[in-house]
Length: 171
Image (cartoon, rainbow, N blue to C red; front, side, top):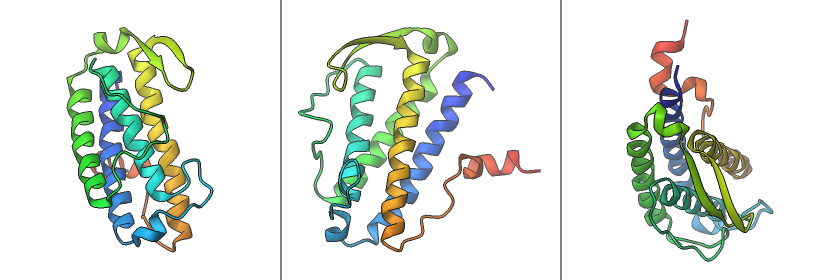
């Protein structure tokens, strides 16, 4: 598997997991989704917002357009259904972007200004994409804990069982 195939798989996984998470979160009352549970971004809603905010910020860097934010903690969209619609739109944008990449493009460096490090950084694009997808997975792991605490079952989360992968990878 080359790098483009690898990132396409991660993009598919991202889309699949976000749909699973949002479907379960839809069944959780808004007041419970917003309850501060002591997570990095306080609540389910705060964590969903943070993942979306970070994805939009990284996409703006990858695709060279401006996306201004006040902080990494800001709430982009307060209403859950609108947040989910934007999540689906961004996941399609992620897939389109990832599908457009070549091995040559992945090897190129990207310079950006980091909000967390408060300065200019430069990394190969493939390294930034690893961070991008790892960041999503990190915070979705927090979400699955918060969702479990609400007594909800989100199902299997393993990349190995991504529906498209199941048909070709099972023995």
